[in-house]
Length: 514
Image 1 (cartoon, rainbow, N blue to C red):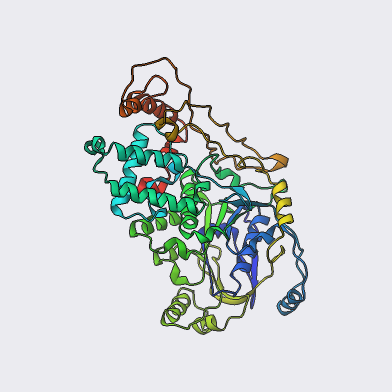
Image 2 (cartoon, rainbow, N blue to C red):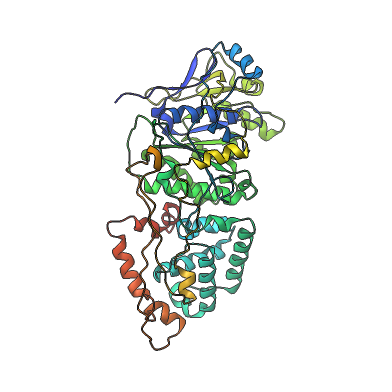
């Protein structure tokens, strides 16, 4: 197997390259505000895309959108190039796909309520242990009765049903308090007020659409507009954690590859770990450790290395440390911790250097051939070949107009699900499955399963004797399937398909049941 050429990231005493073979060993980019983290991220993303590796990143400040446009020479850039003693870069744009949970600055990104599962949904709503237990009952009851939880109105309907039938459900599922149901409903109201309801529904995101290459073989750079999303930090962290878990659960084992299948940049990483329960932190560490074998690399970007737990920090082999400012005891501790994690260079006092680094300068240690960390070196990050900074609305519109997934996610599909079943609405037709390949020569990876909607079948409308609400759901009412029929059909659909994964609602939801 021939190694893919290294990515020239910085230049110090000698050039410093990131080897694509080890990009799935994960990485960490840290430094105070304004020290050059975004430029470092941009240079690494460009190098990966140029070698056919798709990239996913969140654009927190709006300046990463410049990857879609070619860069240009500026006096400041000319000065930096002269200082580094290198020629001007060949400016170019990169194939970019814009995404947005709110559907305003990119293609809408959606997942179903079932996809997130009770664990992540409980964290999203900041539920306590008792409330989270009630939410587990709601999800379990929906699974047992074959009711699809696709959007927030489905979850609201299930909460109402559970509340109305709490006594009847106690012996099979446990106690359900009205106060807990009310707390969850209030959490949903708050989530809706933040625009979160736009994230839940169909068509749900196809992971293969994040892993495309253009006709020239350049990896797509997927940019999630996160400037507004950062106003709802729990939604931001929950979405990215769900996406990472979905990648882990969906992708097949890949072994050692010459380059990753996808590299995932997690900006403002501290949001993921703040106030997270230990059980969730343990599973985050497990996903980060194991997703490498699926060919996925994860780079955490944050201001302070102490933002990342030690169990996760130990999995990050490629590191770029920009300047830190030691104004407080915690800052001084962070400087020492950052210095101690590098493989020491006898010619550099890393603790002092971290405080002295200029803008765009960093202490860098990437994995060498054989997977061992290189001795840390002090170097200046190279300028990117794409634009530094934001783009205009007209430029964004032009990029969206040529997107390979244009039209696939624009219209919401509202299939019959728990809300319609509980309100006794007639079932409708299932949505069509998205086509497996993009237009204009764009290619999706062949080994990533394509998710399709669960099948729904119109039922006979023959009149039947009136039954209670619970009887209708469990036994059916002649117009729709009951629990037994739904479970049988659900089991049949799972065999030989990917629906078992969907019913388990993601790796993080299933592995915590014990």
